[in-house]
Image 1 (tube, rainbow, N blue to C red):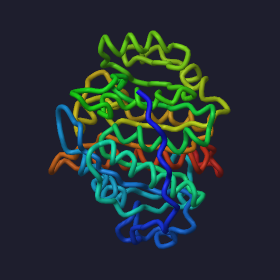
Image 2: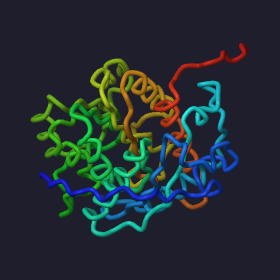
Image 3: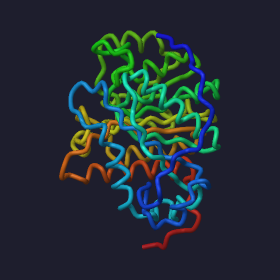
Image 4: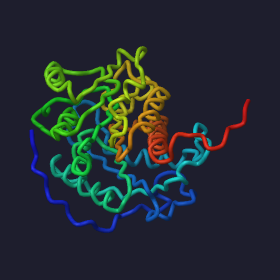
Length: 317
């Protein structure tokens, strides 16, 4: 499926959340200086094509709320990394319908953030949003590679009559023929998707969940080396036992620290140009999962924008 590119509206002033409603601790030093931020959180609670569990519309608000409970100090990097880059968050827009219109809307927002010289980080929302968020990057980078963390291949050419379904997220990304894909944690795929995979081995690299014990991180990140990288992290990439707050929690997934190790190395070898974190469907009364998603988002930002080196040695124990 191909889509004619639409003209992007002229950049307008970005509508930032105030510091007390934004991302991370409201008392952080840059909470009310969004103009200085290098990273911009774009909440986009798209929920239009979910096919099992629901609730992704509430994902962005849950992540923002949980992020305010995170410690700013990163014990791995031994500093408060946000000070290296600065963070701001946008007011979540009223999402348009149908899905295609929502993706056009997100494309414009991402473009505005890029025109402002900042890195967009979309928090969703269902995975179909990636097809809209990726468009400005495909125009800027002729050798773009997408690093996908996911339980599902998302390579269907549409699902249940919706070409922009969450189940077709990576197929729509690969409609851009100069984009390649590295998929990590896949453990659910249809026969039709396998046919597409086999026909596109030259630009799709899959690391199956069943093979985790034998994964070589250097092999996983090899196609990213020296290239612009867009990271899309579907929260169901994490094992369903530790992340049930998603539409299709799936067994056999990644543990949290294993995911971080891959993310860290990816950010060391590639140049991260944009990111999204999708498919959180909060469960009332069980905020641990919201907190996990928020913690993951902060680590993604830290690795991508602050670097992964320890600048001063932590005290020995």
